[in-house]
Amino acid sequence: MLNKVMLIGNLGKDPEFNLTPNGTPVAKFSLAVSRYTKSSTGERKEETEWFNIVVWNKLAETCEKYLHKGSKIYIEGRIQQRKYTDKEGIQRSIMDIIANEMEMLDTKASSGGSGNYSQSGSASYGNKSAPSASGDDFDPFLDENDLP
Image (cartoon, rainbow, N blue to C red; front, side, top):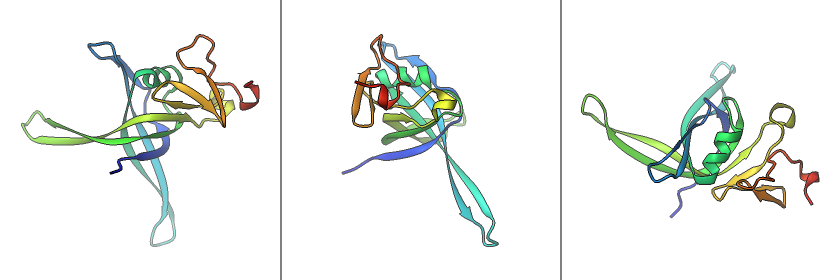
C-alpha cells in the first residue's frame, strides 16, 4: 500500500514551533498550492488549495529556523486524518500532511539558497551531502559548488 504526497507551494504563515510534553520538536504551517486552468471563455484563472503541514524532530527545527511566510518549498510526506468534536458536538475530520522531506525552492537572491532536508535533519545538495542540520558548522545556504 502507498500513502505518499508531494507538494510545491508557498507558506501561508510562519511555522508554529512547539515541543511536545516529552520534548519532541514539532512545527506546523499552512501551504498554498496553486494551479492554473482556463475558464469556458478561455480566461486563465488560478485555483489555490491549502494544506496543513506537520513536521517532527530535526526537520521541525530546520523549518522553524529557515522558513517564513511566503517561502516556496517542496514537501514530501503522507496524509493523516485527524478526528475531533467541535464546539457544537459535531464530529469533524481534518487531513494533515505529515512531512518527512522538505526542500527550499526560493532563489538565492530571496532566501540565500536552497537545500534538501529529510526527517533525520540532514541536508543534501545535488548528489553531494552536507553536514547534519544539528551541527554547528551547518550552512543550509551553501551552493553546490561550495561543497568538498
